[in-house]
Length: 248
Picture (cartoon, helix red, strand yellow):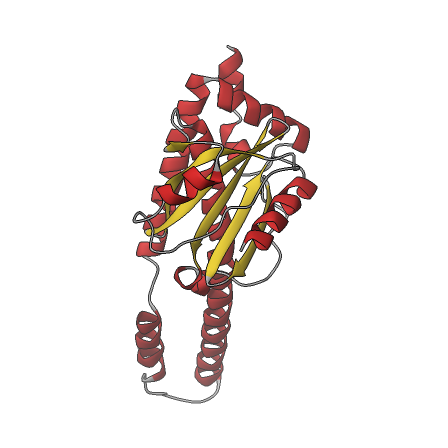
């Protein structure tokens, strides 16, 4: 009965609509409960499948142009009301096209952060969150050689509160990347690293949406795109990000 109450809130949890304190409690429960973890992982996979299908069937720019040309090529029978309606339709079409383009850009950016959050939650809900288990950066970094098409540096954690748990390969938009997991005061933090050129079209330097259920920091450096995400405090996320920036 207890788990049923948790499961009833899973959708709210993934939408980031759970209060911060309850979010931390929920996150701890999902990691410790096999039943809720499996349910959470299933929902993450379903969400990503729906997102991929949505992008697949989005009308192309060429399709919009053809529709505009067909509308513009219709002969004008008369002026007056007919011309006014045609002009109004053209204005609506232009505004709609511009709005659609803006929303696609904005939703594309927000969708990246949503997918990163899904990867973070899905990994923590997995029974095997890492493929290489080690606290030694000199063991984890070489493990990625030959598995991803780029190299990156891991920070020195001595005299810091962070500890490395390990890493695994991951994919975003079918692009391979690295996923590292760190601990700080019983909070798990994910660090994702991808090639910048594979995500440049969907990202800009605007701040992350406040609706995100986790604290997130992202930046581009040396041709790579980094994401640091977790339920730890914003200060901890920033501190780990600074360690990576210094290491790079």
